[in-house]
Length: 449
Image (spheres, rainbow, N blue to C red):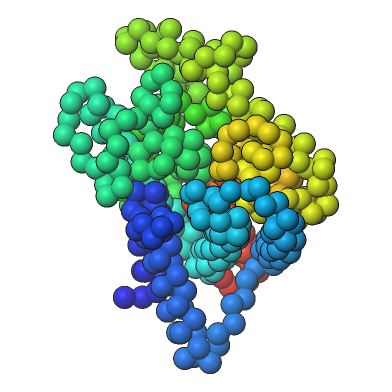
């Protein structure tokens, strides 16, 4: 089997990561082991060819610099923690040393994952399409499975649980059952969906891209988009909905600037989706539920099972900014936010507390320099997107670019309300974006790729 085929399998099973794990004191995802095995085969193959060097696109340099900085501040943070004898052992991950080490390992794994995705698709556009097709096919199955689990609770279907998904409880502390499909929690699932919905919209509304087999049919694409949006709504993820709304506006801005007539198509799609949503609300008498989980969740000041999550998240984000003010240069060390938040600030959420804002947490953990290096990666990527976008005319390249660019944008918006950047699917999208930009730039500059 070719290495490319092995990696295709890894891509397909990526959204099943939280359901397919091996418990080695720390749960290890099976795809992680598969990817490490892939790395071993890749380097062995290169070594036998006399070339073991891992070259990577220049766009990844900020992430390399960030990792080096994070390693440095984490080592400083660990030495600082040694003087706090009152800190107990971390129940979940063993010790104050192991948790930061795991965070660093995950970040390195995700950087390598993004680099390899970029290398696999940078040669030509067909490889980009193949990766998107695999991700969309996997997404369709995950959404159908999530719908089955959710409806099965009401219709008393026999539950077909994956190895680590034996819990029947689906409310996740909420007043209503929430869809999480194969993910650990609904917000993770919503973040995953926001990385693919823009690609589905791009295929459906903008241009009929060739090479997508099952998804070349407009009816099939509409079904895929419909089930994705329904799954996003049933996740009851505020962050997911906000990211989707901003993503749609961003998509419409990019597409509308190039094609005047596409504005009507986008407006028509939005009106159709709103109409379908309204019809469903009326048929199933969901008005009170919509008011409760949308308006109350966002705007209500009362503390109840609907709003407590928003209040806690706000408090945790302010805690991150407070830690940053006391450690503005080095931060407290990667993976140490929960420990400082719980012990130093005196707010008892437990050692695994997060800021529920990726950027605020990185600011607290790696300081201003760390956050600047992290954001540099995305700013340079967006600059490359924009330069390519200006040079493209209407066609496949333009709509692939708009779809991938919007996916990255929607993910970054969701990270303002999200607990972690370690979900590997995000880094697959980032790697796909860099690889596609590399291929597109070669084409625009007269290359042969």
